[in-house]
Image (cartoon, rainbow, N blue to C red; front, side, top):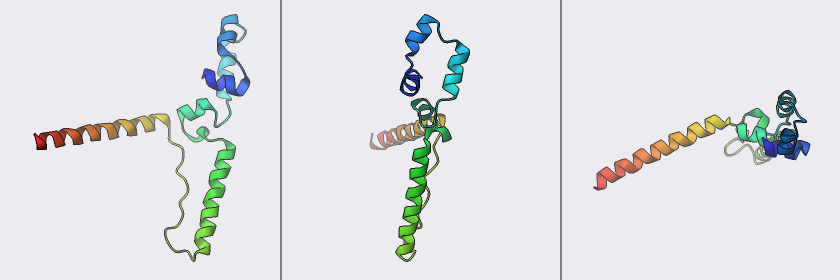
Length: 114
């Protein structure tokens, strides 16, 4: 959160918090209104993790791929939109699941070879 406040508002949280010049209510407002695509929202994930510019680029890229696909006579696989942003806890759950599967696979291989 400190990095997001520093990059967006040029606000050093240590100085402000140490001097008691910012209330917790004001800090909550600043965090809540951090712009989409900021470091804070990227760490949380979800729709706010992309800035407006990034969303526009994703949309334009998709339509350029569709145009190219149509010019090729609609041959091959039709272009798909880029997947939506994933929430941080969904990423963590997927990583844990893959880790469990990998561990189980290695354990099975060890039993079979030993």
